[in-house]
Figure 1 (cartoon, rainbow, N blue to C red):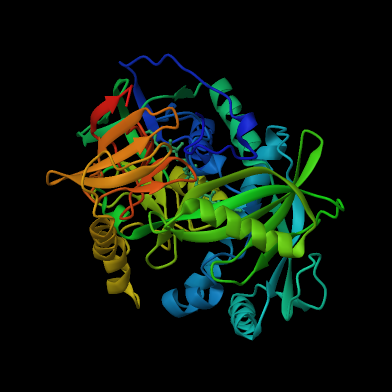
Figure 2 (cartoon, rainbow, N blue to C red):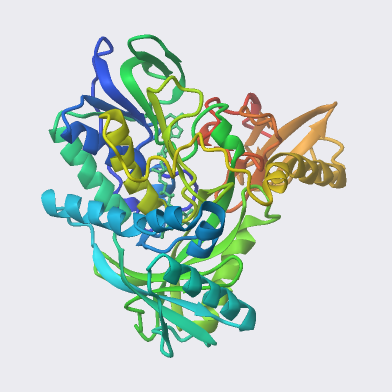
Length: 507
Ligand SMILES: Cc1cc2nc3c(=O)[nH]c(=O)nc-3n(C[C@H](O)[C@H](O)[C@H](O)COP(=O)(O)OP(=O)(O)OC[C@H]3O[C@@H](n4cnc5c(N)ncnc54)[C@H](O)[C@@H]3O)c2cc1C
């Protein structure tokens, strides 16, 4: 497995293995935990600045959401500029509005400097409303954008056969192949003397006076600074409690009429759908995404693919489905990412999280912000995205309730409804959380009859996990930790697998 799900993403073929043989006596300048776009971009930037860096990756480079993204590069975000103005003020919203083009420029600089072939192309984006309600929302987006000097142009034409009531054109967007890009960054990092340790799970660390000692599954790594680029910080970090995990679905289709849209598209349905075109190995595909939901809160995750496919079939002449996959992102409580010094650290531990659906941008921007902070330089985004900011916003209480108590009630109800009397009530290919003699177990029976039995209590904050039939994983509805059928960690914040109870080869 080289992605955190059972389904293959369109990018996955490009994933390659890297391996270093580190000297455990070395004190690195920076240990970066996580080999997605945030970790790899940050490691390379610091190594270029003369820092001795090591990437610690629990599985392989691109294993997380970077291997399951759709890789649109935008300078308008899931958090609209209207929201940014009303929650953070006009001056801060104007800084926020620069993030997209700054990050795209950082990507372009890397591509140019290191001669990277990653299918980067400039595109225009079309944002369209399908009904009057969405039109109101679109007008609010346009008004907010104009306040931060980001002009969106109304248009009567869009390059998608979708009936719309209103639309805007946003020039100067882009797209690329995310795994080709980070693979190339890793190669440069490696050639500059950086080290990459795969299959290396970070477990915890001690911040001492001179350096940090990180305990990992491969041994202890010493470094002067530590960066959590794990998408959500591992373990019990306050940031796990102010970021809610969501799943999003993507499908790559071939089209009968070969009428692939040349530009990027987004409707304003809640949750919205997004489109782009990508050519892989000479074949062209329409990639559509959407049907997002809070992790662990969909009754049948397989159905999300059917809904997305049916939606796309309404508007495009679909021939075949080639790839379908899902992945995870994190919604920050106040809409802005958290990038900088980790709350509770004495100043040597850094974090990058809360990217919403814009992590290609904010993961890239993290590389510059964290490099500047480590080198003691000014950065215009450092205060705005400071992870220690405390910003009570409307709905904060609901948000915290949603990420904890409601999730618990949701599971409890489901368990009561199931009324499972014994472990025998499960058929092949099925999975359930079952109560048995007062304990709660996650039970999965393979199609060949092999049973996997795990304690269902998530090792992070002890919520019960839920089955994700689309990706064959146990997903925690509270903070988004995910585990495979053997209990192995797929997604942070957990740093310990689900406790394995029993396995029955013959039942
Ligand atoms: C379906 C989907 C579509 C998206 N589309 C877009 C888009 O079009 N444009 C955009 O800008 N953004 C998009 N996003 C968001 C974006 O893809 C993510 O925000 C981004 O990939 C996150 O990158 P990352 O490096 O922070 O995390 P990841 O890519 O998840 O990498 C984190 C890495 O950390 C490792 N790790 C975790 N815990 C540990 C540990 N304890 N020890 C060692 N390693 C560990 C993991 O194995 C993983 O490889 C999308 C998200 C989804 C779900």
